[in-house]
Image: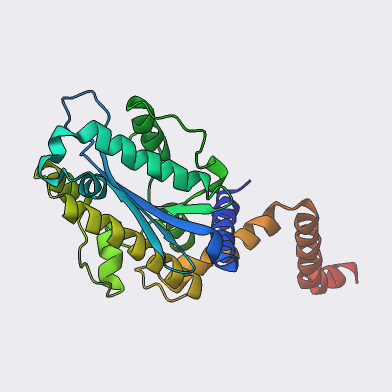
Length: 270
């Protein structure tokens, strides 16, 4: 398969995924979580998860899970760092119970793709802390919005860092929003409420991105041709490669050459 057709197929598939989300938005969950920094770590322990938010794409109803909330229920807000493991475990137990109740859903996320930061990282932390659950998000139901937007708009659709740049282009307020580095700093400073609020804000932002992209209203740096041109290029590539089309092109070329040369040939015959 040619390069242009491959890009076109990715574009087509991404558009289809967006359409599928909004055909049954009540069965789509937008997810984000915050954790310790996973860069420049001397400690081999996996990064601790601090908060998770899941948002129903249709209703906007959002459920959150955080060390902060568990500590408040236990009345240990003033000594969270003394109960990290048990608080995190209880938080993850609640989260995976919610996962079990949403096995029919598609999960829309931003770059949650591996054991460093992703669904596998959440599962690993739960197991490390002694948690046991058969509930997990199947891989085929994990939809990466960041990759979907690249497939639709092209890799240069916005500047880095992409989330913040896309927010600015679309006049989306940064209220309560923290960058990944800021979230890691908030954890170090035990600002758990800020982490919680940032996680909630991000699922709202991702839902906003998806809704605008589906409606064709997402503002990007991509030109019309960068968004739509790949379909035109793919058709051209397909026509060039198809044997029947190629044969027709050759025949038409021969006929054209004969017609152009006919006066000369006729004169030579006479």
